Length: 347
Image 1 (cartoon, helix red, strand yellow):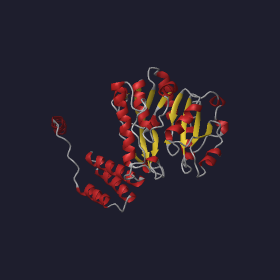
Image 2 (cartoon, helix red, strand yellow):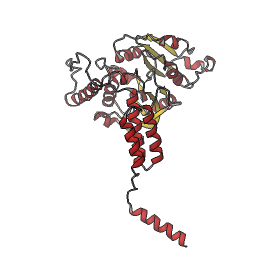
Image 3 (tube, one colour):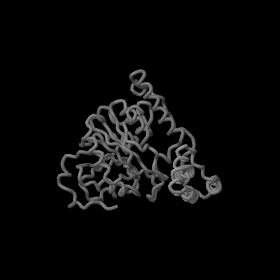
Image 4 (cartoon, one colour):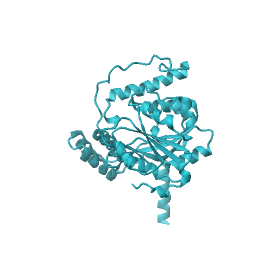
């Protein structure tokens, strides 16, 4: 992926930004240049990228410093967790619209302009979001998450504790972010879920089904270094806080008495290989259920090659090979079509 040359960046884009993209970064040297390139290809919408370095020791800041694009601002983070890093970026943001991109992920081409124009044309909505796709460390697509194929308002489902997509697919009006107080540092993770739920209580949110974000699965991400019980604790706490707000008017965090996590919760850590494997196996069986056996076997084989020491993977591949695809469900319309086709052939 190529960066636009400084000469190709219209001088108007260097004035007051419309969009502020916050990029929290910690030891993302292997990926941050690609993440920035995916954003900086936008040459129509005035934007700024605030890269919040939160204690990198792998040369990430040097890599960012080599990118000659005046739209990038590198700032130091407080090293107090992901929420605090995001808030440090928000405190210096100048744009009217907030977006987030993690330093190991990618934006889809055209995403920024599309979402900005949508918000400009729909002033009664505070945010718009979309679908996303998981990618492997090398960048190949693992699976497109089933976030929904229909464009629709999702405000009510957010108020019911349902988050169908990733916060990094969102474009949010900055006044809404300011009214919400940004991210809540209590959350060691799931700070994005907490924000989505509070956003749905604040204003209207629209979902558009196109893919706008590529989420990289790799061994050093928070998803794959934090225990599953700890991730579930913060997610369920965010949902419980919402129930409290909707029934009592405020939550335990706002009242100063949240549940205390005195130490990291022990439990299994979901490796990136296991994560990719599980997503591929699930996708393979979905294709099989659709009657697409060859595609199912192809995906199943890829899953097995990623995690070849896992015997259950070989068992799943064998079942995909041996199990017949389901027959299409009977419908009276099928007989009607067959009858009409037969009549045409005999005439």
